[in-house]
Length: 313
Image (cartoon, rainbow, N blue to C red; front, side):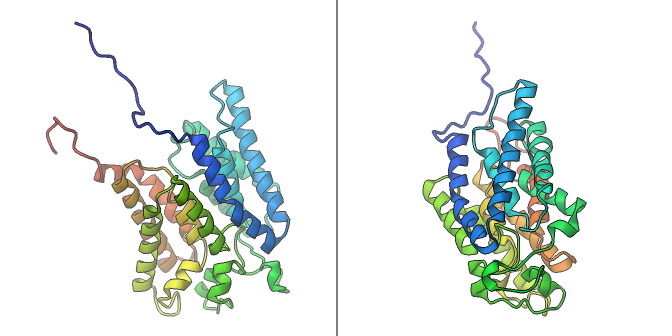
């Protein structure tokens, strides 16, 4: 009797390839990139191009060296490079970009099997590496040139409030991007425009992003002490990189199932809010999402479906 052949996964098929998805993610990031150039000057474009080139070149050279399938042209490294640059201030020294790019692509992505096998977001890990090794260089932010400010460097809006100072910026300025911050996090309007494009193209589901934002806003509203975040939902929404993290980090393909995606987003939101409220660090998006990435295995046990024909535990 012939035995049925065993076919290995993945078994979920779709017409949209990785290249298709990542190409449109790259396109969706262009408005925020143009906004960064407008607010911070052409050096924002230089840093982004440098980051993208370093990521793509690292992936290509490593795969040629190891004689594995070349995926440098699927635009996933382009997305990593753009997001890595978006998490850096315009004043970051150029030599930091290639170092963090090589780390993000090689150590975080390729050594774990490439796209789909890395357990954390490569761009956020590159940002974390820079924060640990060169905190004084990657956590100094200049006001946008549109403000005609005289200050050389400034704290972010959340950083100012965390230290008991007035942020000095209106909600409209925070929404448009006229505040100190990393290249890609400042203009919430342009990030949401790019996110709307991804939703329109059907390559991302808004549920995870909305779950993450709702968790952060609810917890900071309820538990944020007076004088810290003052229970201001719009301030928490527009301050820092919450929108960037929600639109482009939490929506990463960590889970296939809807329940898994929502659990992951909720966990990231709880962790981000906890860091914002209880730690000395004003932001929390980077650490919150990375920790939730690391908890994906535990979360998968919660949302695991019962296999038909087996005994329920």
